[in-house]
Image 1: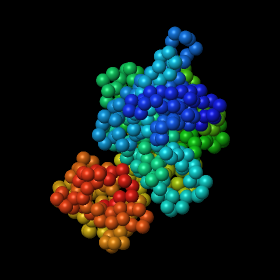
Image 2 (image 1 turned 180 degrees about the vertical axis):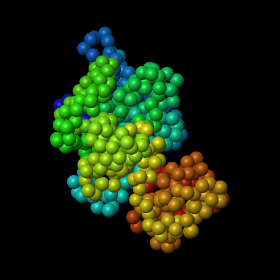
Image 3 (image 1 turned 90 degrees about the horizontal axis):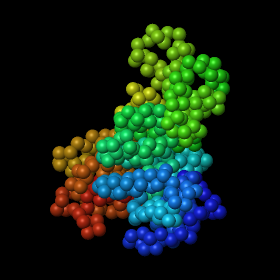
Image 4 (image 1 turned 90 degrees about the vertical axis):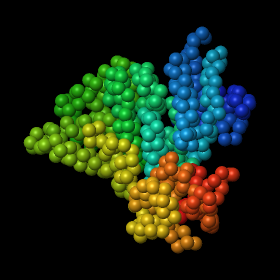
Length: 478
């Protein structure tokens, strides 16, 4: 959504009835697009998303906004019914539709903090120091780890972008805007799934074609979107700039883009509203700005024409040249301090036959490994690692901890492991690793020792486990 000036608060002052909250009055719009607006309310911690159903006819409602409301409401209810996922999206308070007044609404939790793109832009203006870079790495890791959890439960976000991620004041991130999810209930009726992705962040030609053939989207769609999101975090834009001379050279060889343009024209006929958002490759070349969905197809055609011995290479050699050239192309457009993102962006957006298989592989490319002496200390002295081993659970995660996932505990003279990281890595087993509180430091960080169940402390009246600290970014396990 974009910012909305107060003069456009079309539903400001409206009162809606929310179960458990009663009358909730809309105060002012926080953001909007042509069909929806997100409103601050007179209830602290509650926002209301309004879907404008007016269509200019007194006896009808707008079909598109109505379908979008139904889809987002169904996604909210489905995600909140899944244990382990509801903590990563806003709390859901209720929804309704008023056919006479021609609007629908969803009431949800207000998440304080900027979206990830705005936060990254703000940090970039200050310059990236080592601590800030680690904060960026941590945010991207957590963002991708959450998406991976959704994938494990059969859900794809489809239209993932950094605007859809909120960074809370304590550093946690949350997904918002749940309208475009592809969930298990859609797999039974793929042909009726409402595809709502934006061309800047998705491979519309591939996804639309697959859906028309009854083939559901795959993890590859979200891996691609994640790659574009990383580029946008680093540069503030979602399209790659092209050197004018190279663009003119490509324009002079229509065979490089004619087939893709015919496919885009086919999508226009099926989805006329995409004509502006999904320009022809020829137009993109003239504007010197390429959608990521077209970059690798165009680059492969360009290399085929320019590399003299291309046809003499075996497929593996061709793929290496393509990936190497594309990676350089991406890295040249990144700030120097963020050049480490180049390889990950390339591997996430490249042609699907060469793409990373899942988000865990992408996460591994974005790490900043903790010092060897810290890893050795954790492996040797961590009560957490020992307790996990005693339960017969794999402890491989302890060998690939990042700098922000370990913290020196002066009191015991050893390194501690971040509780949210341990909870993610242990999954359902996190409920069986019990903890005893030890102390808190001057900065408000708490430390917990892994113990047998009989020695466990309590958190809000229940036995303390790693799972209970999954959302606490100031909790550390020794």
